[in-house]
Length: 224
Image (cartoon, rainbow, N blue to C red; front, side):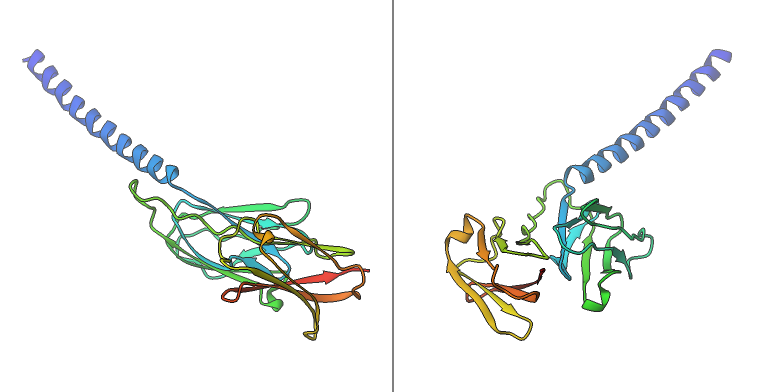
């Protein structure tokens, strides 16, 4: 009787341990699956704009705001899904990167606390984590226009951005729309171009990059 009772107790605990092990294994594999397919998405904070300012991502992805020069920025959440963590981070010359890991699906809206009056806002929509047989789409590489403020030269780097398909025209206009510089080039796809802006007056300017179908504009400042 004692041996029989012991055997039943031993068998019962073996089954319980197997269930616990199976549960832990499933949880671990699920976590590893999400981590394996997580993506790091770079959002540049330059001038008065987040680039890209709207995009889709997946739960488990990491959003990194990257400072490229000029003014410092403070990305901060405004309306986000229930259960998601809020954030307020600084990106500047001393600390150029700040990251946020997405843990809840839904729509996230955020602003730059320093430049909300200039319309510097962003949004992303997080979807449930991708399954192991789905490959996340690559995120478009941000175009670089630097430095800002600039002095004698201004550099435009497409940074292997694939949005533009045709010959690219770069225009520099002042705050009232007067064209100061215009150049057309195919070389910009492979190499950054640097403009001589030493004769321009101090103030605000706009750099417009277009290929006839797509147009992107960046605000820059000329210093003394």
